Length: 68
Image (cartoon, rainbow, N blue to C red; front, side, top):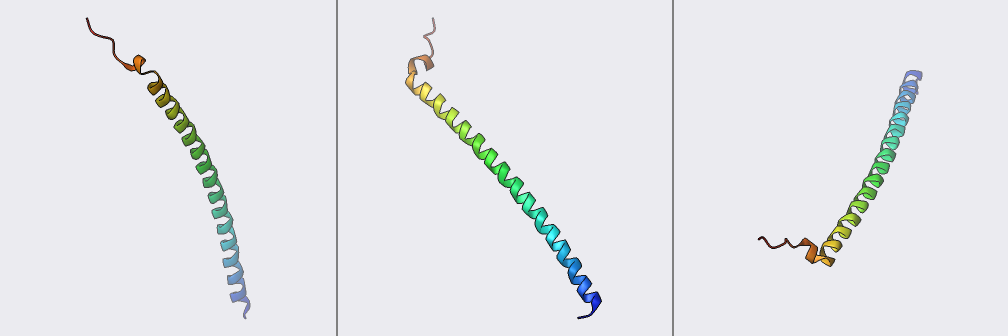
């Protein structure tokens, strides 16, 4: 193998290693964002369930008073 070809392969390998590190960092950040969004969604779901239970348990409060 001649020297120029070996240098070219080493350069390509260096770029691929850099790209792999960059992609790993992006995937890690996206996983953290997904986890944060899942946590927020769970909190909102729990709040929605609590509000729905309160409406069902107190139907008299949800009825409008008679008009005079």
